[in-house]
Length: 289
Image 1 (cartoon, rainbow, N blue to C red):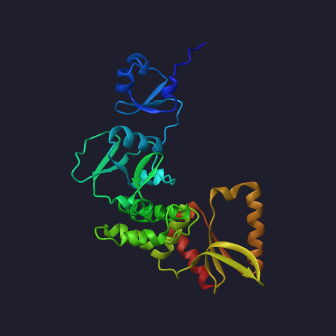
Image 2: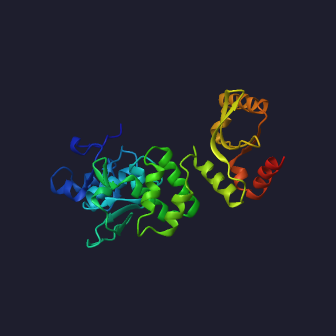
Image 3: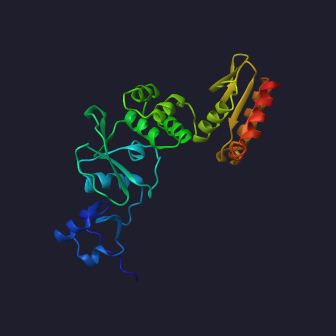
């Protein structure tokens, strides 16, 4: 039978500095090199049974590598519960403008002044407050993806859109971040819905009403992703989850109710988003009819 690696209780499920564990006699160098541990940064290890996540790396980097740092950007968004970064993405930490920034593989350390009122705490770790996190995210992601990220944070209940826009209006905010915050609406139920809304706006379609509740003869019919109520036209993003057998049947019944109420529905898939010219032509034709 294979020998199960010994994991001292004090290190079970924990991140730790390998050099300190050896100096304190908890592990020997040979044990540290064994299969019980996984290296996540130089001299930083974790119990190998712990899943490798960006949250794990962000907490370890702030707690063990740069103790005076504040987790910021995409990494802070992850700690707030919105997964905008993966396990292999660099952790972003912010230190005071006068602090010394060290080069650490897997960690991006930036200097900036953060007011005490804009620092929160999660998982025992200091991180930027939600509104500042959203603005920082908007300044580092490409234009549309920045809007997607803000919408995700608002829909997740992490931050209020009004607070994000107010923070974006502060002096020193990059213009691209301010623009992204202005374009977010905090209503999309999926990233693809945000991308679809931005695509329709770029092609100068009439502005739809997002998350519109359709009523017919005073009774609820459906909530649609985008609607032009005066024309009784709706656009719905059709994600993979709609393909499930039970969901497919529900969707068909829902579509029948919308049609009975006199509505035209244009369904959009991921493939449609990859052919925007054809998609916009389809939506425009429905509006003109």
